[in-house]
Amino acid sequence: MSIFSTPREQHILTEVLKEYLTDLRTEILDTDDEKYRKGLEEKEEVLRVILVKLERRFSAVTESEH
Image 1 (cartoon, helix red, strand yellow):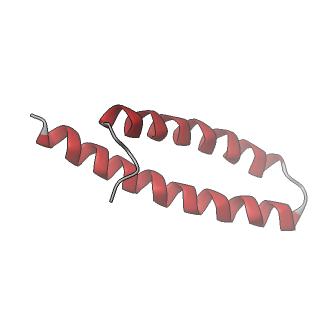
Image 2 (cartoon, rainbow, N blue to C red):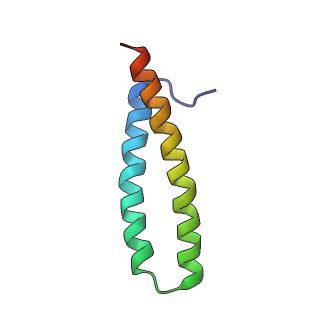
């Protein structure tokens, strides 16, 4: 099951996640509160896994179109 109706939607979500992860990394590095940093790092880890899955799926979809 996919939440995307088009490859374009998937591509846009992938790009948004990449941008957010860059900002999140900056926030993690600038955070002094250890508990808050740990929560941000956990969020980052989950989002990176999602991003890898999206990129693999996007790659598979674009390859099947050729």
